[in-house]
Length: 332
Image (cartoon, rainbow, N blue to C red):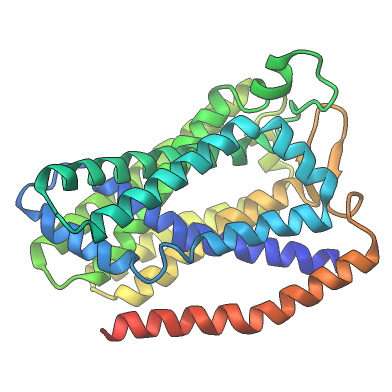
């Protein structure tokens, strides 16, 4: 049952990054100068995000519910020690959703208010992506201390440092790269398509550079990321394959194979997430005193059975509904 719940967490995180992450990246793209293409880009992004921008948070909610019900100690530890970045992420999500709704449904549609909504949408997308990366980086640093005596050690030290900040920047770059990759196939406008390809290439470079920055920043941690990687050959193989897929991806971009481009980009993200999990598996969090494993911190079997059954039944409705939603919007 624990393995099945870990699988649900992994699938939910993957879908949140692939769908929600690309939406964050689209918002960040709108912060960049676009000139006469700005309105055309805005329409393409609105149409691409329309069917899924609200549904994306279902995947994040599933992860939170699984942790709350099945792994209560892990949930409690995270929500207390990381409540500052969690609150920052939630504020960003709220502002982002509000700005996107007002921009789309504002009855007045004045240029001034539209610029404000677009700016808020872009800034909150960048803000949310950055804090999401910080939260991820804080899980396995070994700094979270449930018995900390000072406010700094309890609520700031777990997420503060060069390494979490570098991961925040890395995650934002991945989201922009995903957005560009997806949006290439969403428009027939030649100039706009070239813009997405150009920004995708730049974002690709930033992903590589920021990834290197993450490794450099981890040298100041209790254990560097490089040392952890070299102890796990499977993770090294996954990262090598993800890097190789960059070459394949741009071959598909050049040949205008939109669907294959998206599949390869999704495969890269899946490899990165799987490699990150294997670095620390089966631990969900590493605290200053001991690691918190999914197996050692699981709820009683009766609770796990009921949650697993609910997830299996729910999957019969969630995935077909999402497929139908996308089919309806794309048909329009």
